[in-house]
Amino acid sequence: MKVLCFGSLNIDYTYKVDHFVAKGETLSSADLKVFSGGKGLNQSAALSKAGAETYHAGAIGEEGRFLIDELSAAGVDTSFVDVKKEVRIGHAIIQNSVDGDNCILLFGGANRSITKEQADKVFLNFEKGDVLVLQNEISELEYILSTGKEKGMTVVLNPSPIDETLLKMELGKADILILNEIEAEKILGKEVTDGEKAAAELFEKYPKTDIVLTMGKKGSFYKNAEKAVFQKAFSVDAVDTTAAGDTYTGYFVAGIMEGMPPEKAMELAAKASAIAVTRPGASPSIPDRAEVEAF
Image (cartoon, rainbow, N blue to C red; front, side, top):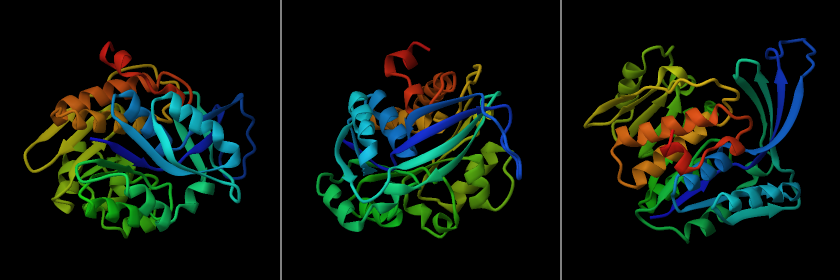
């Protein structure tokens, strides 16, 4: 069984600040670090480090070739990453506050140059029973999701970042929906404070889709037709939460691919994300499997 992560590749410019910049405010940063990132790249790295046979598909500009090297070093097959001369690589401007929270401004760049033709070529290499992992940082997302579903792949969707275009899609086509409380609020149209209740409401809305709702320090919640599961968050001193959700997604999916029950996959994912937030950066913060199992 193979997993195809069809997603974004970014350069992350991470600024250390006392607080997030407000309207009209000019704020000096204490530090600037440049990391590899993008939700797709992060999730591919997490999947591979967790032990899954991982393939990444996407697009970069010429200046992003080092991202291919980083994915390869993490054990990811990058054969389906297109290098395009006519577009810039996607990038993110990240404010990282003193308490470890972050806010992110994205420029799509090459991530928004994905075409149906590129997707069709990639899908020739995958078959029924393989896994497709998606996020909302590339173009042609709806087509890619539908094509994967038609091929009989298990489709995992992380609806992030959430926007009006995504909300108009048939999210119930996904076999597994992995989202946080902000995305849940947008989908449900109301504030989310009770994770168990929100996961149940999401499952009622998408009854053919397994729901995984992550809520930071409040833990994570799983709901399908057979069971409801709660996984506590592990208490750590957070430094940077940028890749916490992506790490959780990669490790959870890898666990499910191994045949783990949801509760075991959630525990593995919670441990991995707990380690990730204690380190700066996105992809570089993702731990190896041995480190997670020793946590």
